[in-house]
Length: 294
Image 1 (cartoon, rainbow, N blue to C red):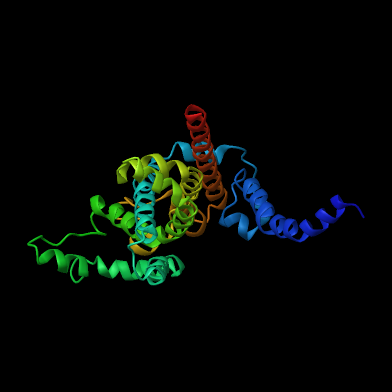
Image 2: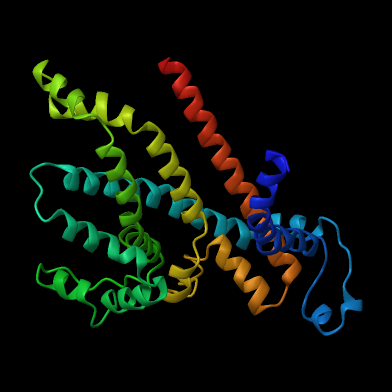
């Protein structure tokens, strides 16, 4: 038995699992998106009809889809920079030689990541309750009138963004911390001898050395934030006035509320195409930046 066969033999279990639980569902979902699979087809498969790209065309004509896409893009555009900035700042603080009790703070800041998002969303829903929430209670001591955090269309999405950043920044913090610890200390010592300030060290040493890590974290964060669902589902149910309805939440409503599974599958693939295009653009821009630096 040659090495190639041995390699395929070791890869076979993983490929089988990926094929059954990832590739096969994707193929089935793609096939469903080309049909009018709904509650009538669930009752009798003979009611299923092939509609080609009609589901996609109808979705692109729905104002609700564009509204949900706008909310998702807004969530990504605001949440990703906040999450990455907070993560990098926390990682730099923990990487500082002046920091004390590093294991405790690493664990405490990472704890929200491993906590169930639904449970934490319920707690935050009470914290931001208009009448008896802790947020308005604290603001009241400063003379600020109560804010309807989750009932006002202008405040609902910022509140969800704040929750998502708090919930997820610890994961990126650990990755950034590992990247910071891999940077040779000699570079900072040489920079200090040359008279470089803390900002110059951050700009010319930390950021360039963290380049690959920043790219990986940004791609993971963007991909995760495009899949916004649990937060609005628990905290606002897509409201108020559909101001927190995301693309994934729209897919959920189409598939499991109205039982339009063909349309829901089309929403899923449109979201996949958008995420793929954004990721490809980020990779292309990063390569162009590396080429310009070279």
